[in-house]
Each structure stands twice: as structure tokens, then as C-alpha cells.
Length: 137
Image (cartoon, rainbow, N blue to C red):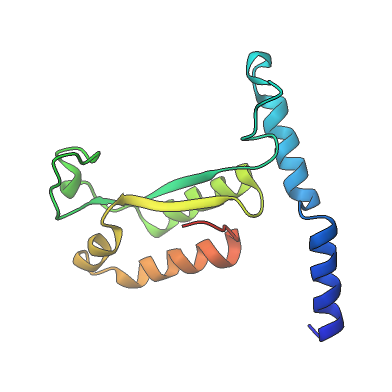
């Protein structure tokens, strides 16, 4: 992309910060809400989408007393790469471009490292940023 194209893209993003795809997704979300939830003050699903999440692993070695993970979390198998990709793709379809995605489930990096699957975690992050184009972590 040359300099003129970059400036044109920036100007377009300034003029129309919400893409056609995002506008369509937001309209679909709004229409899917029950009428009692469609209020003038409703923001989420009407003007923006918030972060979703995908479970990368249910594992953590910290053992915090206030943890949300179940007691058997460290024995639950890590989802396959295909399963995580399905979750990422579904989140992308639901939120549209620029939606947020958190990869959660405890200490995800430690779980993949201990399972001998660190390359999968790298691939998940690449998928998250490249194909899904999500913005928050």
C-alpha cells in the first residue's frame, strides 16, 4: 500500500469508523434482543460489541482461594486446536470486525507449556490477530 492509499484508508476510517459488516452485525444483534431489552440506553449490541472469550485451557498452578476454575480444572484436557479455532470463528461471526476476544481458562500459557503444546498457543494468537482481527486481549 502506498502513501496515498494509506491516507485515503485513514480518511475513510475517520469518516466512517464503523464498517458495513460491523453495522450489519450490530443491527442483527439489536433485532435479536427481546423488546423489553431494547431501551434507549442500551449500548452493548447496539453501538458496539464487547469482549467475548474462548477457553484455551482450564489449568492453573497458582491455587488462589478465590479462583473461578473448578476443583478438577487441572485434569480437564486442553481443547484441540480445531475446537479453539471454532470458538474464535464463532466469536468473530457474532461480534463482527473489531470485537474483543479473551483467551482464558486459568494460566493458559503454563497449561500449553506443560502439555508440550506451546506452538499451538502461538498459532491460536496468530489466528486471533490475523483472521479474526479482534482488538482486546
